[in-house]
Amino acid sequence: MLNRVLRLLPALVVLGVCAVLLQLDSAGERRTVTPGGLTLIEQDIRIFGPAKRYTIATHILRPQIAGRVGAVILNHGAGATAAERREESPDLLHAPALEFAERGYAVFLPLRSGFGATGGPLGEYVGSCESPDYLRGMTAAADDIMAVYAFVRRLPYVDASRIILAGQSAGGLAALVAAGREPPGLAAVLAFAAGMGGDPEVHPGTPCAAETMVDLFAHMGQHVKAPVLLNYAQNDRFFGVQSSQVWFERFRTGGASAEYALLPSFGADGHFVFTDAGGARYWVPVAEAFLRRHGLPFNRLIGA
Image 1: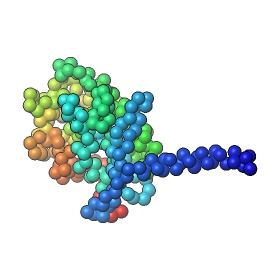
Image 2: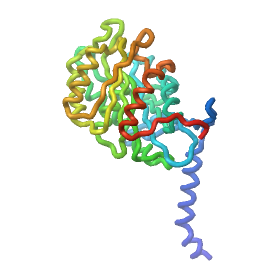
Image 3: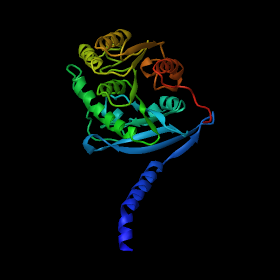
Image 4: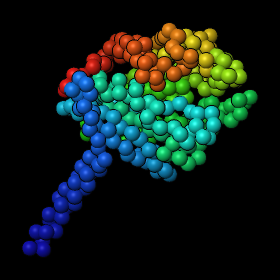
């Protein structure tokens, strides 16, 4: 009898591990139904960061549909003050996350080190406006993103060959730096108002250390292989049209496959066209056309 138990022990251990994983996978799940009849699942989890030194608070929003789905890792911007960074929340990106989820994507909204519920030190500090080290700061941000990316690829409901990196402002910049590491399964990058160093009050439209940002885009263009959409608004008070167009040209000169979209003016500051629910009518058609050109579906699901 004892020998039989010992022979069964490895299988029992495997079953036990599977049970734990199943419990973790469903822990804290909340379900809502959209007006179109699509059931969405929301969940808050924590993912080990680089070298497991801390955990990254991550919100998940995904459709309840059969089979594996594409994934979008959606990255937030960076507030200028410590108070703004403490208040960072996935809620600030809920509107665009919903647009992706309703089109069949599992959306992951991580809070990087130094932000919101993740807390801890600000790993992506770039230094003073006079002499910022954008590459160093965004490399630290990309480390967090890649830790989440590795986790997402292992999930049973994710199509590991169809992952999109996306982000707004500093989050868009960090997504591009992460994409430069050529992670397996990366299908596209959507960067909305990507950049840093903007101050709409002190120097509207013209970021500090503009040449340093140009150099960063040139560097990223040499390393990013996935197709990229750089999306800006006409009245972005952080990064003006002239700046964003120069960034795009330098990025593309590096060899990247990239497209540039300039959206009409939106509200008082087009920098927030992506995060504002009312901005979807501008950016969604552009993103949809871009993704379809690269073989990625972006059709709204109805009651799947």
